[in-house]
Structures are given as C-alpha cells and as structure tokens.
Image (cartoon, rainbow, N blue to C red; front, side):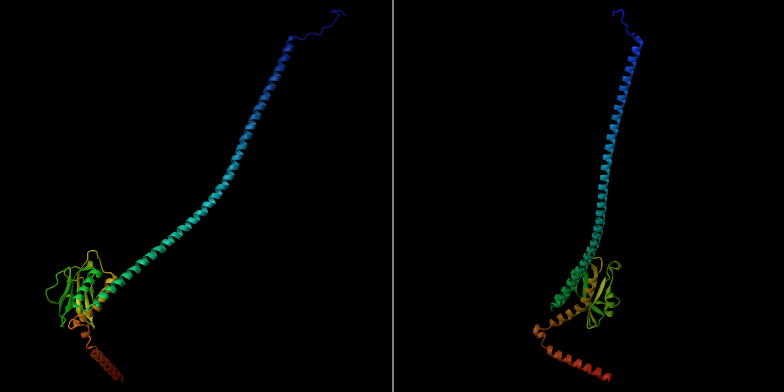
Amino acid sequence: MSSRGKVRAPEQPSDLRAEREQFVRSFLHKGVELTEDLIRENQALDHQVRLLQEENAQLRSQLASNDAIRELLQTIEGLERDRKALLSRESQLQQEFAQHSQRHEEVEQELNNLASLYVASFQLSGTLSVGRVVRHMCELLEQLVGAQAFVVYIVGADGTRATPVGARGMQPPSGAVSMEDSALGDVCLTGVARVLEPESQKNPNEPLAVLPLIFDSEVVGVIAIYRLLPHKRGWANVDRELFKLLSAHGATALIAANLYAKEAGPRAALHDLLFHLENERVRQLTEAESEAGGDV
C-alpha cells in the first residue's frame, strides 16, 4: 500500500493538548499543595505532640515536686512543734533557774546574816576588857549595822542621867546628860527600842534609833544612832536582829568586863565561885519551899 493509501490519525487540536497539560500541571500542583499541607499539618501535629509531652513531663515533675513539698511541709510542721516544745521547756527552765537563783540569794543572805550575828556575839563575849567591849560594840555598829554617827551611854544608878562611854562619827557630850523628856529617857523607861526609818527623821539632832542595853530586865545603858553611812538607805532585817543581840548581850559584856577589872586575874575572879553557887542553891531551895507552903 502506497503512502497515499495510508490512513493518518487525525491530529488533536493544539488547544486540547494545552488544556490537558494545564490540567495535569494543575492536578500535580494541587497534589503538591495538598502534600505540602499534609506535611505542614503533620509538622504542626508533631509540634503539638512534643508540647503535650513536655507539658505532661512538667505535670509529672510538678506532681513529684508537690509530693516533695508536702513531705517538706510535714517535716517543717514537725520541726515547728519540736521548736515550740523546746521553747516551752526553755521558758520553764528559765523560771526554775530564776527561782533557784532567788532562793540561792536568799540562802546566801541568810548565811551572811548568821555570820554577822555570830561575829557580833563572839566579839562581845570574847573579851573581859571594858575598853575592848566598848570598842567591839562600836565596830559592830559601824561595820555590820552601817551606823556612821552614834554614842554608847551607860545609865546612872538613879536612871535619870546617862554618861557616854564610846562614840563614832560625832563628838559625844562631855559629861552625863539628862534623859528626862527625851528619846533616851523613853527607851530607858520602857526597855523597848525606838527605831525610825531614815526618811522619817525630821531633826538630825534627834537620834534615828535608840537601843536599850538590858540586864536582868533592867536598862543599864542605851545606844543612840544619829546617822547612817551614805550607801545605807534603810534598816535591814539583820540590823534588827543585831539590835536584839546588842540589847541582850551588850549589857552583860559590859558588866562582866567591869567586874573582872576589879580582880587580879582569871583565877582571882573565881575565888568566890563556890560561895556564890551555894548561896544560889540555898536561895532556890528557899523559894521552892515558900511556893510549896503557899500552895498548901
């Protein structure tokens, strides 16, 4: 068959090819866009997954941290309870310590007072010298009581006049003084000490305290205190105890020393001891018989 006899396929119009190509390109382009969209969505999903994983990890960590915080808070609460208990115990111990300290100070003060009374008693009874007895009385008033100005008197036989035998911090009267209408006379008459507080002393020439020296219920002397040492603001309990000791033992010490001064020595002072003991025994028997006869 000749070329002329061949049947040719009809040629497609050029616009159809272009449309097909345009369609293919458009389809491929949309496929690419869809693929790109899917990739972007996948990437976004992956990102959200990672965010969720991170958030989940944070939540897990926070939960663990919360558990640790709760345990820590419980531990802190326990420690706070222990701290309060320790503070309460410390306060209790401080109160007990303060009480013990106060009691210790009181006991120490009592011991000091007893020591002062012992020293005073020993000083008064430790000598038979009249001068030493008077000097010891003055030292006790000055050093233990804290008296700055005072006079020690002995009372005359008639009880109306008093003669100074010792003094400190002031010039004593040159001779016997009348005790009428005075604090000295009142104390000599009653046998009761007259003690004023320093702030109530209106006249510095009047004694702040007058103490009787008593022997056998009779006032044989008085001590007049006019002024205290600057550091002493008032009377202490031990001062009043010392006043009692001086009143009770001062007169005895003076009388004993005065009687001993008349003797030649200790043995001579005892040469009439048996005679006096016998007289004392007879007197007691006589008094007992008189009382027995009176009862009958």
